[in-house]
Image (tube, rainbow, N blue to C red; front, side, top):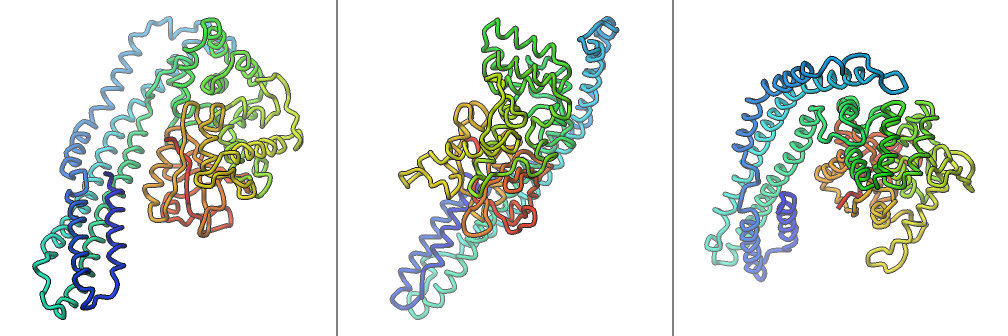
Length: 524
């Protein structure tokens, strides 16, 4: 059972006790039995203090702090030794690719990047230690709160202590109900404090570890040097893709898997495209298209097209860059397509050939330009795509209603989840999705689940509202530190939701305030 589950069970006990009604001669004994039974249930549910043990956390912190000074130095020395053992011919002016960059140039850049980034290990380890110390302190406070509440409930609430005379029992039980509610609130609060501490620690530890700018995967498609040079400075590039030249988490791995699954002939063709790419930016777009999957002929047409594009136009194949530079162009076509517009942007993020089709009109799969009934512009093509997506999501049969969702109500969350996981759909290939309801009191844990999905390379649709129900959908596309970067479809702009406002359920979109998150679509 998770900390959040325990907290919810305790909150249910509190809700039940608040409904006991007026205590009188006829009700005092049933209510007393209910109170004693509730306390027994609480003791059974909350018999163990919230984990983890702060002493264990502090011990781990001490180990990290002890190792931190030496870790970066070890790696920097290893890199320098590797540099010294590479033959001079590698560093010489050997002819490189046809665009002028020699093998030596690439190797110098790669080894310099590796050495510089290896020095991030020591400070990151110290950051981990500091985060763990803070976490240990928070857990100690949560456990103190638990201990005080648990001891009071266990010692003070006993059937034998209730006066036998009903007239004496009434004020005693009345006070007992209040004391028990307070005690259980304190217990629930202790588990809530622990849950918040765990989620905060996850975020802080994630930030500390992300400070180590070393790869967790060396890509066959990108090559060893390309893999090194693809690493982004996390502080300046929280999304994991910098100025259109980097890659989102998981892309290199999927590209390598798809490359390995090709026939030898197709693999050779794809590898030739990668080897002959003009620069890292174009190579990475080919890798992104490889990660999506498809036939090698379409990939070749895509590679040819991006080779002809300017650097600026190429960067705008990333819809977040396009929206940032062209606000309002990729806006929802009508009042019911905020969800489908968000899904189109998600698909553009995960499918570069689809993005090329929306932005430029060229479809590499058909080797033809798209004719859109909404007009021969990015705006027209986007409007057509959003309306087509709307038809797909609203064909999903909703739970318990036994029929398709009415289009005038917008995109249903289950329809969005189903479409995200459809092969060739807006989601990350090979991923299944589900939708989750976000109760107003669970902002911290909901933030953690959404942020975790985004940091793993996912785009997350959020169902949001300003009243008693969700009325709008936005798409989380990346993180800016602890804050969420979103595509907002009604304006066709990129915006930011601060973490504190996400968790409190009160953030702004443009000039509109009072928004809160009601649900999300994330991987199962």
